[in-house]
Length: 196
Image (tube, rainbow, N blue to C red; front, side):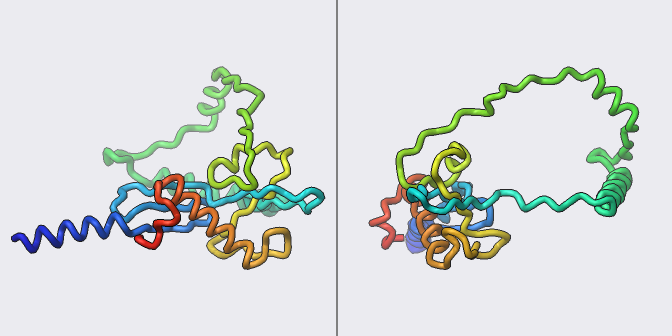
């Protein structure tokens, strides 16, 4: 029995010293093996642009496809298929799902009062350092001289011919993002990583 308790305590220590990194394209999740919820940060870094340097900003969204008549018809056909499929599904209580007629939706929309949202769109945060990591990248004023990089796009390294697109740059971005999350979110000094 004593041996079993010793193994359990040893297993608990091991869980505390294992760092799990799940690098997604848009978000990175990093945590200890013992954490039930890892820390989730935007998998992006903004680096200060050198004076006179080239501008580069990876977009978060994929480029828009030109909406031709054929494409609009295809989108409408897919929407109808999804609508019919949803009508065939049962609700959680086992009852049939009934679609809401478009006239009823339009009537509701005519009676609804619009909610006025402030035109400011939020405040930009001030950054003094050479780079900004994670969710804070979304709060950088676009007029400032920062190049924004997403090191992973669509599940692959985001290597391109532009600024910060070399393999070395992308790997440096990954190292800086992951190190920042480990240091500031997990509170693990980078000098102590050899113990993990």
